Image 1 (cartoon, rainbow, N blue to C red):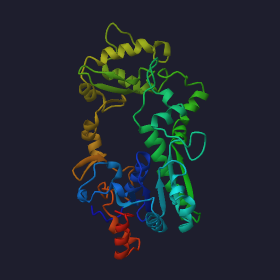
Image 2: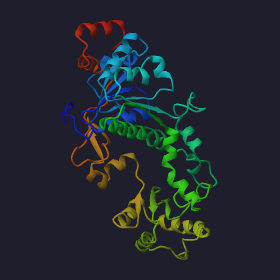
Image 3: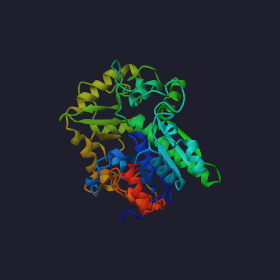
Image 4: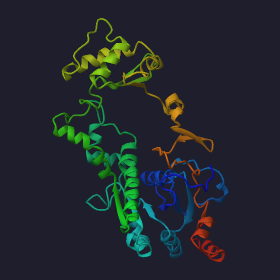
Length: 388
C-alpha cells in the first residue's frame, strides 16, 4: 500500500506526537493505525541521516513521519507551534509541567489552535501527591491493587509484563480519550486537555473485580479466586513435553465437554465436585496428572476445535504462525518484519500499516514544507540546530 494513501476511520486527522517511550508512542501508533497522519517530534540530537530509508526497529513508532527538533530553542518552539496550528491533536508523555516550561503546554498550544485536543500521558496523573515523581508500570499497578491480585496463592505478586499498565491502562486509554475529544470538537465543542493517567486507567480496567468483591464473589488473597488461577478449571497445565495448555472451562457445559473429550479422570482419581473450593487442590492435582500424559499439541488437536475452552500456550513466534491467527491476518509481514496488524477491524474504513517506523528526523524537510516554511527558513533552522 502506498505510504501516502490515507485509510482508516481517522483519515484526515493530523496528530503531533512529542516523542517519548512506552504508552505515549503506543497511543500514537494506535491513532496512526486507525488512519491519522501522525508527525513524531524527535530530539534533534538523535538524528542520524545515514540511517534514513531503512526501517527503524521500534515497531511502536510505525505509521508516522518524524521531524527532528530542539524543543529547548526558540526556533524549535516556533516549529512545533506551527505544526500544532494545523493539527487536530497532540500527544505528549512528559512529567507534569515539562511542556509548560518548554513553551508548548496546553495554554501555549490553544493560543494558536483553540480546537486542539491536547493528550497527556503520565503514570500518576497531572496532579496528586505522586504526580512530580518518576514511576514505572509495576509501581502504578502496585498502587491500584491490580498487582496484588496477580500471582499464585502464597507467592509474591507477578508483574504482567507492562501490558496491563503502560498499554492497557495507559496508551489505550489515551487513544480512546483523544478520539472522544476529537468527536466532541467535530460536534462543535472546543479543544481540551485529556489527562490520561495509568493509575486511573488500570483502576477502570479492574471494575469487574471490584464488583465481584462487593458481591462476595472475590476474596482478597490472590490465587484463590475464579479468574486468578485459583480455580483448577481456569488455569494452565504442564504437558508431557514440558509445554503448557490453558484451560478456561468456567461454565458447567464447557467443563462437561472438557471432561468428555479428555476422559477425565485417570484412575484412581475421582470426578470431584468442582463447585466446592475446598475440592480445588485435589481436583487440580487430578487434572495435572491427566494433562501430563500427552504433549501440548496432542491435547490441542483433541480440544481446540470444540467448546472445551482449552488452547495451547504459544510462544511469540508460534502465535504468529497459528492457523486461526494466520487466517485472520492477526499478524502481518511489513517491510520484512512480522508484527501485529492494526486492530480493531472496520468494514467500511479498513486500516493498514501505512509506513514503517521512521528514523528521527527522516521527514524534517517534507514536514516543514507542508507547514509553510520555505527553503531559506529551513536552511536557517538547520544552521541554528533547531531542526535536524
